[in-house]
Image (cartoon, rainbow, N blue to C red; front, side, top):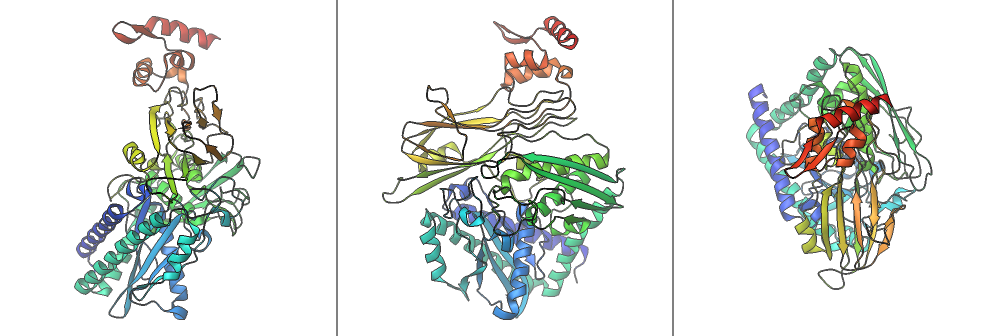
Length: 585
């Protein structure tokens, strides 16, 4: 019998187990993307295919979909002790894009199916047209790397060698790929053993009852919070940069309806799916809806699959929010901030609050090295590149951060997802030097509350390489401000910054030679409110900290900052005259 105390004890034990899985994978992974950036997640599902725990982050609904896929095939193939499955097809199991490889095993105890457990880890390369696999020019999912149907990797405890052979023949860094994959399998099998031990101690029926209690809890708490909101309907839109193979901006639309404590998110007004990798699988849209609701409803609600019971998702088949194969989906993580902005703005309207300015455009970069530490091997340097969040009516945007960080409300398993790779790790493993890492002054949109300022990371190549860049928003169209707030600075990728041969990349790929430099400049977040009403003391602080230049303070905020022997100081009288003149003008 799973009473409340037993349920809480089991919740704690399972979340500790998820933390152990994370430790095992991160410590034994080969790639910097998993080891340093920690672009991975872990999931334990019920026997029915729902995730009752926190910790899976953006993948919480992917594990459930994959588990249900196995259940649908169980009568034909059977689920046996020691079986481990692998897959990465976005259209079959809902992973965000092809490099996100899922490993999953059913947990059997006493002949009964108790749970499913697994992990997802983004691979630095999974083949395809360019290093890093996914790229902005793709028109079909097949161009984004090897597609692995959901299939057995281990059969009753023994590896299926043909799977590894196919993978090695199709990826650029087979040893790194299979090393990470082995770490995933190891963490998953350890988890399976721990779950069996819990089933032996508490009983299968008690586990299942506790799982259901955990899943039911978010629905009731969300309902109680949402039914107090004054609004009934709200709409919001976002526009993505024109993809290379599409030629025009891509429009996203959301309509939210509240009926009591239940919400309906309707994305039917969004464009049809396009032959460009800005389509997003519904599993990721579902998670965005859930976590935005959590952030707007009440702190402390569990981020598990049960949150989806509190709302309905409507996403028209064949649209960018519910694409059909063979639609490419590689830029999913670049597009998600646009969905977040729409959801937060619409939910703010239902709550009677002001909208939030748009987030700046972020991206990923991949360098395909033709040589490296070991002769005869190719290397892929894949990195997550940051930008900034937009301002709101009550605070400045967050500077120099991945915009996804400020969507996930909390982490019970340690540090934030999607960390940048440390400079030291890059320079040890690849023929590259990071020459500068800095804030771009005046990149955040001016406003009463300033948009987050974007970072710049400048690299020098010590050997030839091919550069593959991925972004989807904030590089052609800047992040919009709200309430008279100004837009953020557009993002750029620049080869040989500051040199006579300086070249701002227009496409998604370019050959570079030894001695070249290149810089990734994220997009700044939009501002909120009239810049002329920002407290001059805050502008002075921004200048001292490098977020705003002396010239930008005067031009954008009407604030005069004087350079004196003692340092930078506010000239209050000159500021008053300047602001009076700018308002009159």
